[in-house]
Picture: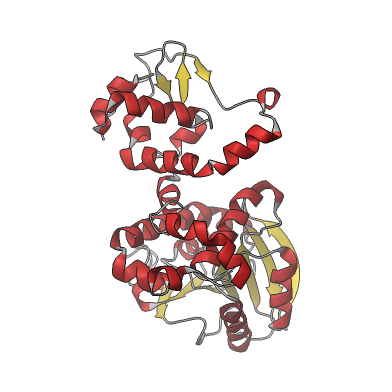
Length: 360
């Protein structure tokens, strides 16, 4: 997308004057509750900015709403109103002369940013979310997903049969998230003594690819549903630079894990429902040789730095599939019930933890 501003070495950047509200300016509880009740407006503003491509349109130099409107095909006055609302949350900032500049958060809405959250922001605000959130009280009363009653079918069935655009957003969001965390996982894990590793329910295999690139003597296996592994990371497929050290196994880890390796990695798949979690962990224990390592990587709802995000995702999982994010205690309990010996717990990054386990 064409941006409206020239290169940074030819244009001075103005000092922003509108930024996120400071602690000293924090509103009283009555106003804060009003703001929270209007939280949908903030989510909608983030979604609108992502769909309009405002962050992609804004370059290094300040730009007015009129200038941005020409690029994103919008009306200047409502665009300025949208930008003003986003500035209240530290997403963009307004200069003294009424122009807009990037902030750390607004850059994360750019598609070309290496840490982009554009598609994750879109995924969290897809049209179906606006229909299930108002029924959260029903889900809390019943303890079950409201999705089938709302849409007449299960979540993934609906996604792939009736909401093709949303399914594409989901795929891009999951790819973005996996790609960004893959290197963190590779940097964390010590593969001393490991000659074979498997990523169970590993999606397109970004974590596996990062591990194999870092450890050139290790061989890898990727297991996931047939339609998922068909889109595996190009590095792992035939002709890819890691293909000679990889086997791609189409299958369902809830049904069977048909191989032995030294290290099994399970990342962000133990949150759909308790029965799926139990079956997956028991299948790992049944497949593995004694002494094999199992590393389970998950978001935690009792992890303070990311609790607002993970508790929100926890509630959304309740709504769409009847699932749940874990606490340390609940995840350790399920591992122990499956027969795993749980060892150390390591932070992977600001929102993921790795649980080291051994098959007895």
